[in-house]
Length: 277
Image 1 (cartoon, rainbow, N blue to C red):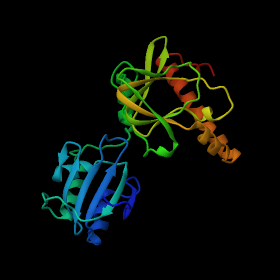
Image 2 (tube, helix red, strand yellow):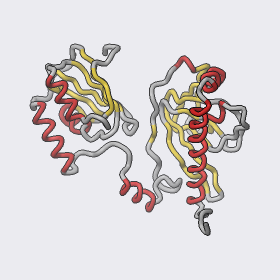
Image 3 (tube, one colour):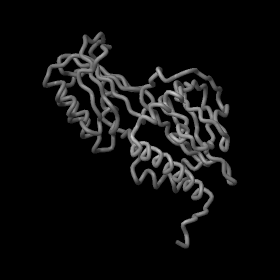
Image 4 (cartoon, rainbow, N blue to C red):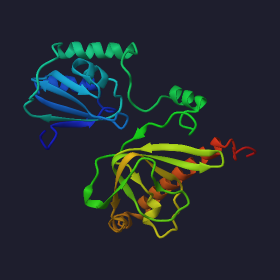
């Protein structure tokens, strides 16, 4: 695959149907790569003279893979112009594929991949999913890792505790491979907060300030995990070079996240401290 994408963008800004029209109008030949934080693997669509001829997406291939990718309502795409070395398995026209996919979406025949809707969140809350008792949060993935900031790599086995709540230390890691579970210890048992995957960071902006920093959550390896220990001195220099206002915004967001987590713990323990106000 070539180094520079000829076309790239966000699926939340331009739909896959519109992308098909652009590539078809330009008789483009190449490979389109689609990624989403809500999908474990990228999707690939192969184009020849503007028409899709093959595709893969997780367990799906060919036309089934293209239909599945039309369900990705959030994600990023990159199209690389190059010769495709793969056989044609799709014989439908580009427009026919788009119309069929849109109809299948309307009929609920294609699974939508993206952030949960309000109804899904309400249903999950009522059934206890994500509360630490039933189910598990979806894995959140970050962006590509900048290895220039990685000082050392550390490996952890399944179930091994990486961070203990209440402990001290200003180390910041990035997840290079695998995923971790972030939870809070409560008198009612552990509360699962999130599952983080490759590209996500373990740490806080507060760690880049002179303020005392206490770890607020427990981080546990899910399967084999490889972490990159970041150069906090370099990060500190970059952080302090920002304007005071921007640093204040980042620290404010950091504080809000802690408050949201504390609020989740209160709800988990059925102790609503806002009552009476």
